[in-house]
Length: 178
Ligand code: S3P
Image 1 (tube, rainbow, N blue to C red):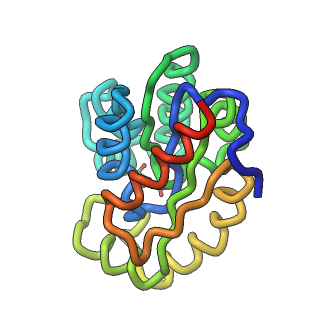
Image 2 (cartoon, rainbow, N blue to C red):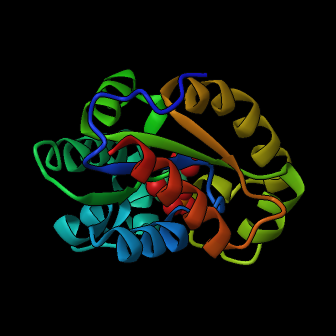
Image 3 (cartoon, rainbow, N blue to C red):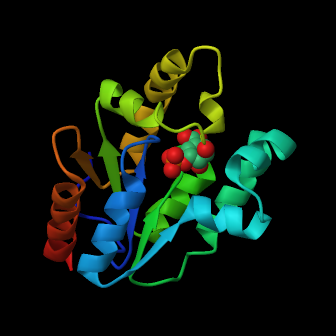
């Protein structure tokens, strides 16, 4: 795993599976680093004027991925951004290039059990509207973990940490490199 040697430390980019805490942690990191918090899911929803479940239902995952990539690329050139991304952003290879160009990429991981506990509380994730969502989580994690790993400069295992502790680790790593 590459560590702390990303070209652009100006921005922090959080990747990881659904329920890994990207948005909550991202807000805390932005506050500490005096940056601006941005969420690619939110950019897509705002531009479309529709919620993610509706976008998936009407236009499909391919359309969502296209819009997600567009949202990500719209951030290139920005500064002092803390960006939370959707869990599937790494599944499109061009997005990985953009993530790396955008900033210091941090992968938030958590145990499968914790992820499951978190995501099963909310029904807003269309990819988990399957007959066996628990198995879907397992299969998607297996497929995506290598992609997160390849994209990341830093990995933070969050299972036993609070959001504040995760944010603190990220801020320390960023400050060391600035
Ligand atoms: C997705 C994750 C979601 C959202 C969409 C697809 C995925 O974001 O982008 O439902 O493919 O894992 P979160 O990771 O913020 O839940």
